[in-house]
Amino acid sequence: MATRHVSRLPLDTYLRDHLIANNLTTVRDVLLLSPLDLMELLGLTWAAAHQLLADVSMQISPTFTTAYDVFTQQATAEAPAPLRTGLPTLDGALRLGMPLGSITELVGPGGVGKSQMSHMLAVAVAMPVALGGLGGGVVYIDTERKFSAQRLQEMVHARVAEAAAAAGPQGARALQAQAVLADVLRRVGVMTPGSTEQLLHNVEALQHTVLQYKARLVVVDSIAALARTEYGNPSGSGSAAGGGGGGLVGNIMDRQQVLGRIAASLKAMAESLRIPVLVTNQVTTRIGSGGAGGGPGPPGSAASGTLTAALGAKWAHCVNLRLVMQRLQERRFLKVAKSPSCANVVLEYIIGPTGLQEVPRHESELPAVLLQRGSVLDMAITNEVDYGNEL
Image 1 (spheres, rainbow, N blue to C red):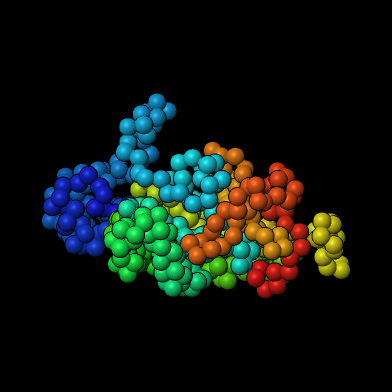
Image 2 (cartoon, rainbow, N blue to C red):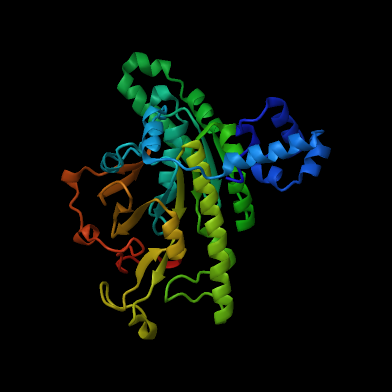
């Protein structure tokens, strides 16, 4: 909450303008100053400076409330239009769309469709309301340099074509694809941090950016890329990251501390502004006890490598909803692996012009391995597919 922008504080307009004019844009900026500093910068009296610090502190201090008060606030608050994924089975399980005020994670190996789903949801938010979108902005934090404006354009054109076909000849003439495309692209703001320090800075300043773009969705694609590059890949018993034991432990502690700060800032922003946050995560290979000697054994054996979500258990606990995307031979599946409010459903999907498209259940027989319940860290994918360097 220390990153809350001062423009959202219930302060006098004149005082808010003076704070921003003096580059005091967040609660942290104000609270790091003494009353004397505020008197000099803002021309306040001693009493007024003390009162300002007290008022700002009260706005971010946790307050006591009852469950009944929370229920009443949620029941009477104006609920924003839900963000649907377009996957009927998943939308049915989520009921109210992507959960607001929390972090949803997409985890899976390379090439399975994580960025495709991120682009698809960005389009779903930025499309005009008349065409089934939310008409809102999107903040897309691209750490892997995989954001594709061309793919976004293809998805928009496909959505417009579907809407035109449904509207008939008269409606089709009224739809101007280029105008819609320009409108959608202007609603998507892209950031490309080059280090975890830059990523943390962007995330901590996210409230102002979200308000500027009137964003209804924040995407981080991916949360693991920079952390694994800068701090190595210490997760998994089969990892070869790091040199000595002390350095490895230090890397893990530093990485987890940074990830914890990023997650805390994302959650505070999401809860404060009541919007969903979508992050993508990579996978790592956990080698079984028999894998140290001669390498992976046959699929399903104790020596077989198992793909698990990267970044370890601490990051897993930062995530509210975990969606696992995996590939078995030529088929792709999505599974709810962790959720406080919906069932662990499984669905098969393909990637089409508009993004992910669910394969109807009567056309898709789900493999038994996907229906097993297990740890939210293990993804139960044996080495049936050689992912090569994608890990």
